[in-house]
Length: 335
Picture 1 (cartoon, rainbow, N blue to C red):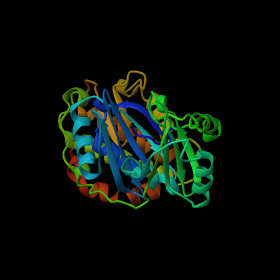
Picture 2 (cartoon, rainbow, N blue to C red):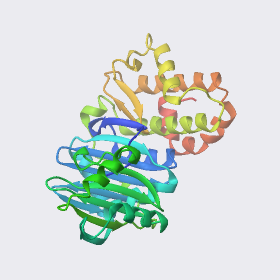
Picture 3 (cartoon, helix red, strand yellow):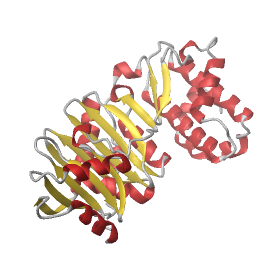
């Protein structure tokens, strides 16, 4: 079971069939200060944690087993390519990301405590006073364990055993957990979580991803798509860095696409023939790649003028032009 704060997802319930998972993870680890990419499939779940652009841990829970760190990261990316997962992204505060990233590796320091050997309310007071970091599990037969999560002496949330890992407000659940812990058949365990900052290798994010014919539609070659993905990524970052834009980039882009639907039908957001999300393009239309390049670059040229991004955007696009000069010339991708 993977427990993380899930109040407001940045992205929710996308399918790995329609995204390029490596680019997706790479995008969000740089787009957000800290958080995780959460993947779920029948019988398994996993998460990739990041902080300040670095991958700091990964976990997989499947078949009753939990695996972590570098092997888990590589397995998650591999299985996401081969099977259908749903993907969500959660931003997690920097002060607590270390806790949630290392939670599945919590070290057991006390087990089989009972209401006859420990007073849970007194224990909680001591834990808070000692600025403890870890979790208390309360197991009431029959059923899964309730959990109380504590970070540096602050109660971060509670998880009910039947809730499937959903973190709840401790003010609403702590009293019930305390009451249930007074049952003489209840068992209590205490686990410590280290806040050490692990760093995983990100080389696997840059491995070539399997080609998905259905998701890539009728594109003639992959290079023009990569060119557009990088272009959109640079444009989005430039847009965000101006600090004066009132509308989210995704909203502005879709609004511009709607203006062009009469000329480029595949840009219609409601037909879902073309989409850009998580740093990756998905295209299932039948128009040739030349028209796709023309449509996207035309939209971005107009947006750059309308939003006053000209000089800054041209500066930020220098490396893009160097990297994709051949494709830019071949497809007349002028921005």
